[in-house]
Image (tube, rainbow, N blue to C red; front, side, top):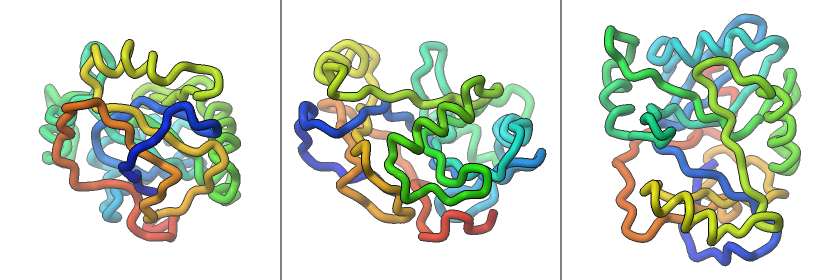
Length: 212
């Protein structure tokens, strides 16, 4: 599911907001001691980022399918795309490599059940339960409800001073439609932010289990 980029009134009710992380979109299928990672283009990235695949393989139950972003985080917890790209281009772990973290933001299959047609906020609740105690190399991406938080203040106090690219706005009741660029997910960019060149985004196929 891909982001739209359009004007959005951050006070419009019914939306949640996430910090935008910069890396590669990764789909993960895991459970029963196994894990497989796939890029948006369907490449098998399981052995490229063994710290993530080993961490997810340790999660009990399943199978689960999640959507997230593989990132390298700096000492302040910000994603650094250039460092991630340096690591990712070698397609393996190596001595001195920057560790990659799986910034997971959506749950698509829960204990074998396809939940893509459930509202986003319900999928988020299930994801939070699954990763109540995330294993190493997994970061649960939190969110702000704009009916409980001042998104403009968050932008001024967190996004701008830390020079983040921006936020991602998502409708709380949106379903997950793989491969579709939807107006229900919107990138809210910081003014003058220049995003790094990305080349592996969201699942292209409408079959969320492709290759898994």
